[in-house]
Length: 283
Length: 142
Image (cartoon, rainbow over the protein chains, first blue to last red):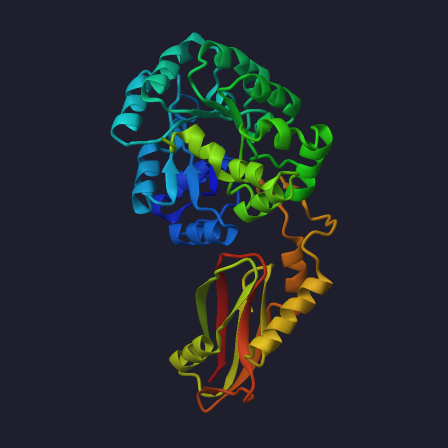
């Protein structure tokens, strides 16, 4: 099964009825000209890319921006329309007074499968004590966390909150909690390689594209900045295919992954097996 | 008089085509215009509108030709992040194929009917799908 661990569904028509909310999303997601299209088209695009399931990521910016760019309710609503193809994650702004209630509801009632956090846009250090009850809730429900890691495009947000090494103490203190460093922590990809190499609970995704075409950027990142065989020989069980849709089309990103130096079994794990284990779809 | 129509074509794949002649004829009929012209224009820069014979072999030859002329993975200057979009453009090949095939066609209307050669069909070409594509059809005349 091929799983895209990293998609942003904020412009799918079924949750895009309010023009003010769309304007808010365009501004706060740094996707200024993004079109709205129906879920039917998103599914066709997944089909064309050969993707079986996509993980839908919300983002709660309540205390910073006054709203969530996509709410947990909207994620749950989309998943209910196509539960065989869509996997919903939750988001919670750690600074909300009711953060734990939101998270409890997301896991217990809305049946969301993991948590998306963005330290840069949500303005927290991953090691901040306010995160302890959130991490403990994830552990209690056996839900993974996908952290935005590395550079952020979001205005007035600093990448210092998301540099890969700031997650090391989280990996150390919560070894039973699976975490993913999204975007491979670019530009600090070597730090991400170190963390995924060392910590069994640290994963990374391939949702990185900052220069060039996907194939060219992957060649630069994975074949030149990192060793060409590092994923194939060591990190094959820690790296997950993610596209960052709609910042780039899924088809282009999966084509780039398909050109990485990976043997068939390793490629299968990167394209879906690791995500299934990370999310908890296996056993 | 001008009757303006906008319609959508939801495409199914990265590169594909759809025959849209019957759809255009339907707009001509709806317009009530007896004598004039009809224009068909795609609203996008990585799609095309062509007129050809609706034979699989011809469309297959066009597929081969466009992919020979415009490679998917050449060193395109257009492959970079666009700050005004917040997205990366990596679809130069779609734009270039679109430029080669053009974005529109035109047919005469007489006695309320679109005049086409026996072998002609209007074909919507997708070069960067699947997408929901907008097509403008304008019926102009009396």
